[in-house]
Image (tube, rainbow, N blue to C red; front, top):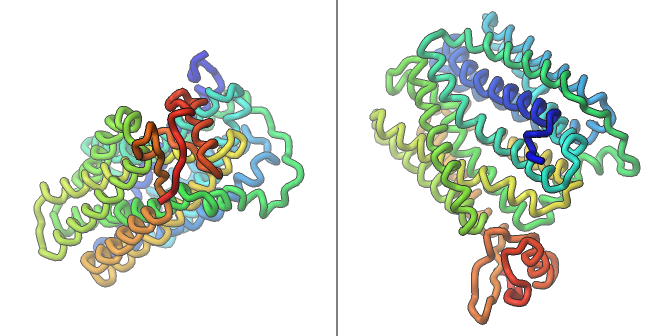
Length: 442
């Protein structure tokens, strides 16, 4: 049976899509609201708001993952949507900057709890193991697609309406999501016995700490965040104050980055069938470091060309896709199905921890000292993350029929000797066990 033939999963997934795009549209509108209230200080305001978001994501997501089996999950998910709908509906009426901070704290607290709760529900709705893995993948793809399509939708919407109406539409979207959740049969989970609260919270993070490929992903999260912060935080001020554009131009520049992500994401599945995940992701890190270098050169030289800015923003989007898109595949190969939700929750928190570092740099340093200084710091962070990823994510080398070869695209977790590799590959039907012997790790 097809995954989307499962009625309850189909409805719950639709609720997630609507909620994700609602959050994305609200982020675009928030940047314009910040500019409306603070003008040239909009970067600092937006940086503070997004820093609040990241703190809450880092703290609340693992807590939600640890306690989600003790909550009435359907009611809890619907309540989170209702809270977000109310908060977003209130945003157009704020008149002080601190109002934004309070409402964003409420909005992002609800969003941070929604994702791990949703992931914990999936195995109770999609019971077949193969379908369950696909469901987790679909959830990860939805999370990625939101970041690249929301700016495009916002750009189109802002051509016909003012940004404050985006908040109204977003609020309605959250309300629809709540209705879809309530129409889904979600059984309450049975509490997991044994592990203490801290052990439940830390288990996913511990997996990252002891697994080379996951340590590499932690470093790559910093590369993504360093480049992405330029786009998310500084676009509104750069377009309005440097390029002289209007609010629709801000959304279209964000859409340029999203378009770069979309183009790469569409092409990647075939590439990943032939090229190792590590190779693709390291290429993405190189692209992002180059894009941040180009952005720094642009602002340091005083270049104000729309085409140059657009090209850099597209490159940032494409580089992010090269890293983010294969991440779910790597996570799935690093844990058993039972452990996947905790691993995804850990990645959710750790990736946002990287944004917690870069958002204040882009917002506060960019506003207080200037974009050149801020982007110089972000370049150092991106380069450091790229180098660390290569050192932390060691590349296995194998001998097949007497010839050294790089690890195959479906590289499994390496535990001990080459037999683990051979057995895993043989089980997937991608490499004959007798032809592949692990020699060393470099």
